[in-house]
Structure formats: C-alpha cells, structure tokens
Amino acid sequence: MEHTFLVLDALLEKIGLGEFAHHYSYIVHTWFVMLILVVSSIIFTRGLQLLPRKGQLFFEILIEKIENFMLDISGPEGRFFFPFIATLFIFIFASNLLGLIPGFESPTANINTTLAMAILTFIYTHIIGIRYHGTKYIKHFLGPVWWLIPLYTPIEIMSHFARILSLSVRLFGNIFGKEMVLAILFMLAGLYLAPLPLLFLGLLVSFIQALIFMVLAILYFVGAMEEAHGAE
Image 1 (cartoon, one colour):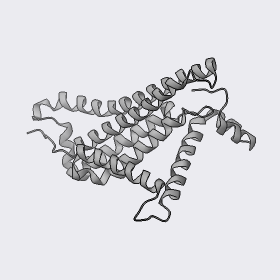
Image 2 (tube, one colour; image 1 turned 60 degrees about the horizontal axis):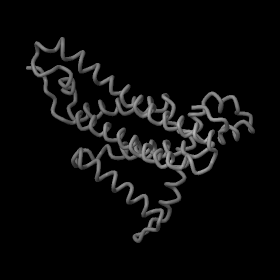
Image 3 (cartoon, helix red, strand yellow; image 1 turned 90 degrees about the vertical axis):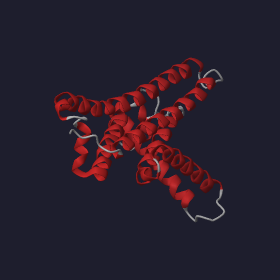
C-alpha cells in the first residue's frame, strides 16, 4: 500500500537511496522490523537474572505462551521446530503492528513478504517429513492403495502447493485491507478520535492473522510427522 509519507523512505532518500526505498519499501520495512526484534532481544536478554526485570519477564511470558500453545497441538515431539514457529509468529505480529503507526507500513501488506514466509513454511514442512520418515515420506503422496496413485498423487501434490497460496494470500489480503481502511480514515479524519476504534480493530486483526498463520504452519508440520499411508 502506498502512503503519502513514509518515514523510512524519507530517511533513505536523504542518503541517496530514495529510488531503492520507493521501489522496495516493503524490504526496507522488513529490515526495520528485523532490526527492532534483534535489538530488543539483545537489550532484554543482556544480564539475564533469576528474578526477571520487566523486559525479560515480558519475553519469557511471551515465549512460554507460544511454546505451550504449540505443544498442545504438536505434542512434545514438535518441540524441535519451536524456534521457527516462535520466530514466525513474532515477526508477523510485529510486522502487522508496524502498519498501525502513521508514516510506516506493514511488510506483510505486500504479497512478496507473505509469499516468502509461505514458501519457507512449505519447504520446512517437507524437511520435517523427510527427517521423520526418510524416503518413506513419499508414501504421503501415494494414497492408501496402489491403484489410486494416478488420481491421488496429483491431487495431493496440488493440495500441498495450494498451501503456499492459502498462507500468503490470506495474510496479505487481510493486512492490506486493514491498512487501506486506516489510510482512508486518517486521510478523512486526520489524527483525531475517529480512527481510534479502527486502530483497536487493526490491533485485533494483526494478532489474529499472525495466530492463524502460526496455527496452520503447526498443523502442516504435525501432518508431515504423522505416519505415512503408503499404497499397498
């Protein structure tokens, strides 16, 4: 989504990178979110204490909640992909929230960002499947009986690739729509009280969309871990 004024684009323009910022604003804002998360993690994990301070306590509670939520779905066996899931949720949520600030945009309001995360999730799903089943993982795509292979296999392959489209378009569409509505309201009402209800709604949408992406990723991973139903 195009804003009338983007803070990061304006800063890059002053150092001669205006053309790059104009064409690849979503990349600039992606790097900005990454920088915020990296700096925050360094600050709040420096000098860890047994009795945590506010920043450390916040991150500990956040990570614990995400881990418990994931383990309720995947079971203890899914603990090894927790770093990927936690990173995915925190990055998406932070990216979604960034667009609520006037002068910034959500990287997730661009299809390239959501597509990249969907492709990573797709690839990691099959890495997990191969890790658990080895070459037998191919049985996931063969169906319950051998004579259904010509019908079952193409459908199964298409359904797996459709996950990329589902993950990327759902997240992109909802966040893009959220930012369009907020941009129109800010343009009509300025920074007054009128957009405030939409800001709270935007906060809710940001959280729900990050949660949905995370839950779907967990379900795909769990599905890859399950026993294959190979053709007999």
